[in-house]
Amino acid sequence: MRHTHKLVLSIVVMMFCVNPILHTQTKTASSVWFPLQIGNEWTYTDGFQTFTEKIVDTTRINGKLFYGLSGDSSYISIWYRSSNESLYIAIHPSKDTIETLLYNFTGKIGDSITTPFSIFACNFGNPIILVGKNDTIITPSGIYTGCYHFKHYPKHCTDSGLWDSWIAKGVGIVKSIVDNISGAQTYTLVSLKLTTIEQNPSENFTPENYLFNNYPNPFNPTTTITFDLSVEMNTVVQIYDIFGKTVTTLFDGRLLPGKHSFKWNGADRNGVSVSSGVYFYRLEVNGFSKTRKMLLLR
Image (cartoon, rainbow, N blue to C red):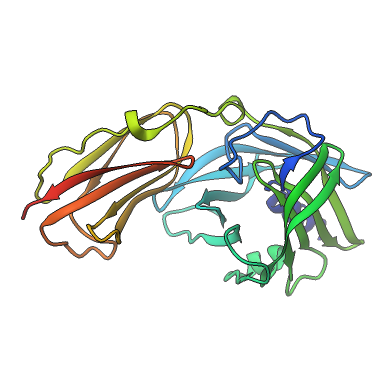
């Protein structure tokens, strides 16, 4: 049963409060709730034992970029993806893997999330309820204010399960309460190590000069949208109609630095071909956005 307890720690102790008052961490981008980047490390203690979690790998699941979290060994216990103020998780990635929503930071106090799979319900609880948005948490690494507090209700678990988590924007989980065979244990953040990319985001980045004109334009039925990223970033590429309605999402996840291209085949999110007319493609990265116009002629 101790192994199960370790799995729980490895899945929960890595993530999320805002504004560390006494904290030595280099400032992160304010738009990033979960600093997912290979090499990032979180060290926690319950006052007796200390352990470290680290992001060691990436993979794509159904076209979306996930980050793998590992504990003391090289074994990756779970995969994470952040998007639009939310955190998603997946286990044992394959082309058929289904992700599930774990935390939503746009909700209201009292909102709950249902975890559909037994392993998530046991380790993370079912439901997961947002109970606070402005908690202050004192840890060995500093004092954090404005923390989000989630209450977990683990089911069908005999000696493990997450009860509470407090989450700091740009930091991750700063405090958690976990149940195990010896009772409840409280873990707090000792130290945080972020890689260079996350520690020094491009403060002056704007998609204005990085989003190129689609080609061809006009087009029928396919066009290519291309853009450059100077650093790794949360990225969303979407298509809109003239009424501002989202037609489809071409990408939603994190991308590495460099040039990226996505094709649009003139179909909506259900695969149905849209009619001729003016459409807009939008690039959103780290809180900035840029929109350009294109013309579909059938």
